[in-house]
Length: 400
Picture (cartoon, rainbow, N blue to C red):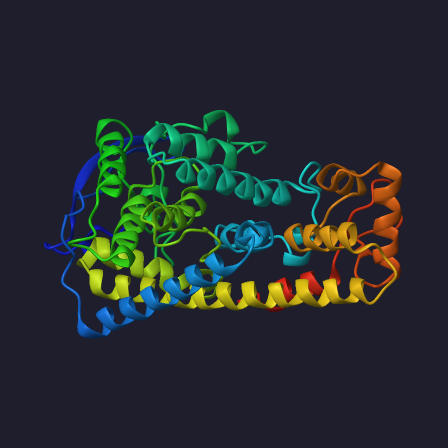
């Protein structure tokens, strides 16, 4: 890390750290520890306040649309899988979106798919806990991170705040033969008391009601910066940190239904995203980061709302095709709803969800295949999975 980047007014401090490289020997460097968050908003410019207002309006429109739906949770799974794909891609774990949407959650085909689907499980757990009125705590945060890392090489050191030093990225201008700690782009807080206190302070700050002093969009931006800068876990900090954006908005009652896909926008602008985070640490550029963050939330809310409305339209379209057929409407309509809510599914899932016998569920799926409403992911597979092509088309087309 280039220590000279940090200005005297940086919102934190550089603390000495020491270590030993097995090949290069002993080293000494500095790590950045962010100062505790203030209970007032940082100084922001008029353009940033305008971006915040636009974000609030977009979030309100999204929440209003969700509240008007008979079952707003119906669309959570398909949009959440899309979010999982994008947030994982930001961290270098890439899987094609169509593959993610049709993947078997019980038997992921690749290591990459394991991590992507772990995100879905982690997010659903977090949403459920917040909906029950639980506060974000270190144990809950660590539990979420542990779910994210299940089945990965780092699982054994997951589910707890890290006990070793980590570095983030690599500087393009760094000496390739220098110590990795010095060639890194950023060195977050060292393990131990300072890190653990920083995480507890952040979660206590998030639990407080700042509505009278800090706009929820700004509070979410501040918390996101603090979490990513502390980087409290060995892995998964980026994915967990972006989930915290939605959990924070859910806990603050900005979103009643946490169907918001924030990562596609940030993924498309990943270099600026990382630069904006770093600029807060080095130059206290809260204004630039908050404006960037607010624009991201506005775009994410607009896109999620558009996708939600489009999926509801597809649901109505598929139901109409059922009505025009000779099928019994009730069970066939229920299967359409299941196909919208689940990007892919098995006959066994239909049997369980609709309360049908296996034979009846199998016949019903076959009938919707004949109508062109459903299609098999792999017709030759032993355990066939099905999906609605119109639903998949909407989700893939809206990829940012």
